[in-house]
Image: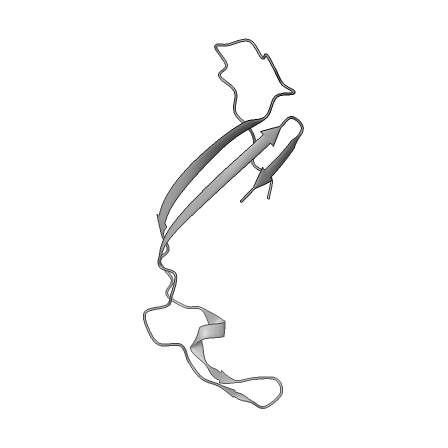
Length: 77
């Protein structure tokens, strides 16, 4: 995944070859009304796939990222 690295536009760009680290936390809520793989039913091979229990998993999510960057490379965990 590629994420841009933001620099302060009010400051001059210095030490671009130095290592920088930062983290982020993103909370989100997904509203899913229909998810075909979770609905269940017959498959192409004739197997009867069971339906998932409602509500669908993953509606409330927290994404935590740790980023280590040295222009032009970045590592994300």
